[in-house]
Amino acid sequence: MCQSRRMRVTGVDACRRGWVAVTLDGHGPAGVRVGETLTGLLGPDTGSGAEADTGADTGAGSGTVTGIDMPLGLLEAGWREADRAARGLLGPRRSSVFAIPPRAVWEQASYQAASQRCRELTGRGFSIQAWGLRARLTEAASYRETCGHPLYEVHPELAFGAMAGAPLAHSKHTEAGRDQRRALLRQAGIVLPPVPRAPVTDTLDAAAVAWSAGRIAAGHAVVLPARPQRDSRGREIAIRY
Image 1 (cartoon, rainbow, N blue to C red):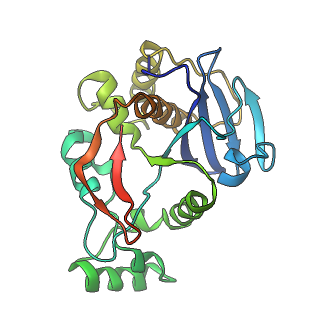
Image 2: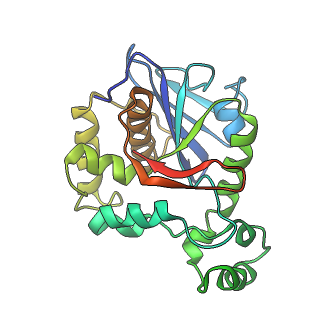
Image 3: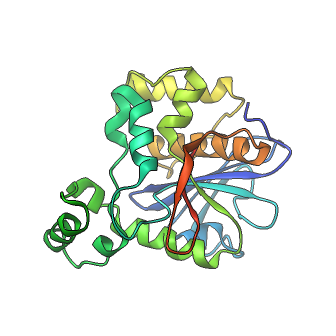
């Protein structure tokens, strides 16, 4: 079980329909919620743009620690050490961590322009799969500025690896991989209720992020890298789990 279940914690992951959130509060089953926007899903009016589920309220108000599976914090040039450190720990799951380029790259209107700008700032391009994060990455950055509570970057594969004691051998996109992740969550005391409209793999990831949020709340989370870089505003660029 995550180390802090007295405090409400929430884990968020992007999905095809927007975002899925899993909330744990130590008073019953996990709450699962799907919403089109982060503000609708986690803001004061949790009903706006979000579809009700079962279990705990997912509103990320005062007293909540919230983790999100989305890069937070961008450099002006060069590559994030957090991504390099995470990839180094994940073995067969290392491809689940994208190298995240500098801020100016995400301001470009096309992948071609972004790749060229990336080469100018780092000496090489970046993957089109990472570019696919652009809309959600931008939304997460905007939400972070206005939400009024701390938001922590978490990677679910690191969380599952910590639960298992080693990186998982099976991809979350296989039945064996999903079964293994469900079993690890059950061992941690997290049972997800059936929510028909919640995507399975993204909900499992959100639950792992919530588990990590519990570790953050308890002060037990691992921080990558141990000495985080800072963005232009002095904020840490780090992945926690």
